[in-house]
Image 1 (cartoon, rainbow, N blue to C red):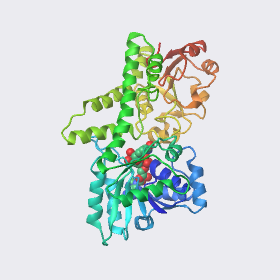
Image 2 (image 1 turned 180 degrees about the horizontal axis):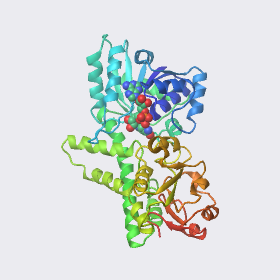
Image 3 (image 1 turned 60 degrees about the horizontal axis):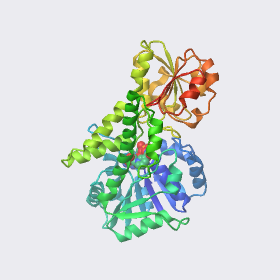
Image 4 (image 1 turned 30 degrees about the vertical axis):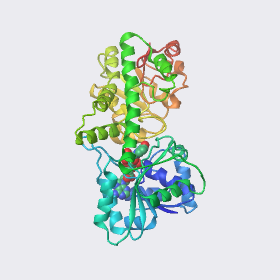
Length: 434
Ligand SMILES: NC(=O)c1ccc[n+]([C@@H]2O[C@H](COP(=O)([O-])OP(=O)(O)OC[C@H]3O[C@@H](n4cnc5c(N)ncnc54)[C@H](O)[C@@H]3O)[C@@H](O)[C@H]2O)c1
């Protein structure tokens, strides 16, 4: 089938290249001309494991094309995916301007029956408005259906999430569109996928409910970790025991210095805004957001207690991305820590396997970047583990300690065993650890 994809960010590019792998012919469009030129040269504008290979292979097989022409894109696909960004507005609500720009283009150029799929995370009511905008801009008297099909992929595991989804949610009132969407996802390779058919608003809300629940689980265990710190309990054992209860599950029970990324903070705020717009005060969600912002600050008081004067102290940051296996630093906890340290006159040495380029764009030469974790630690007073990349788990900490000026280790993600790290010569500070 011929398929079009608007937006070549994390979601659009993964969706486009995975659909090409399923045997479809896919045209990917972005308004960012530079991004399209880069993609045409075989350069992927962000890091996602396995994506480069998948893109190159499908371009070579002539299954995947890139363009910045909206008209060609609308005319090409029988199914058109809308995967553009939906960033936060100052009041927390989702900015739908890009979604509706695409809807307008579709209205202008659509020339035969097509299915328009909202894959971006959008609040309830967006599919209805998309349909209205397309109708308003129609040049030809053609039929079309709008489907709400939220995306659940995780950056860092996006391809495998696309290929083995735990669910595919399809919000539509059209049997014809549902049948077509089944063909899109089954492609030539698969014969079964867990598909849920529902209405527009329910599909749109499922995505927010999903992300907000996960964010709540993280904030809950962070709250327990903070209480552990106060009463001298060990959160790792508390979380392990809780996770053994099959009703709870061990996933998302890792306390730390807050969640970030382009989805959880944004989606929690967008659902709060949607609830308020509908005259409901979502108290639990408001607390999740507040708690998470507080959680990003919890290391600084501990650091200042040990180093009352931060001026000219050198901190080695291990990890900058909001989570491992991505170069994405949107709302990353590292950004808060960097700003605080710089404001206090501290020096920062940093290493991250993938996110140094993006961080450099924000802080330029205010941070010293190093190619290895060992080099970043040399001469530092303290290490702050910010992101739990595997690369940081099996280092020779005893040797690293010998190259440092002082021996403090702040473990923002609780990846080290306090006893072992102490044997290596470090003073250890975790989150809710004994
Ligand atoms: N990143 C994730 O992990 C993830 C997971 C699930 C859902 N989502 C949701 O998917 C959506 C996209 O997220 P993303 O991370 O891929 O965003 P992104 O910012 O990486 O990419 C968005 C792309 O859309 C392009 N764009 C904007 N307006 C356009 C237009 N009119 N025509 C064509 N292209 C246009 C931008 O240039 C950009 O390249 C968001 O709603 C997000 O919440 C993201």
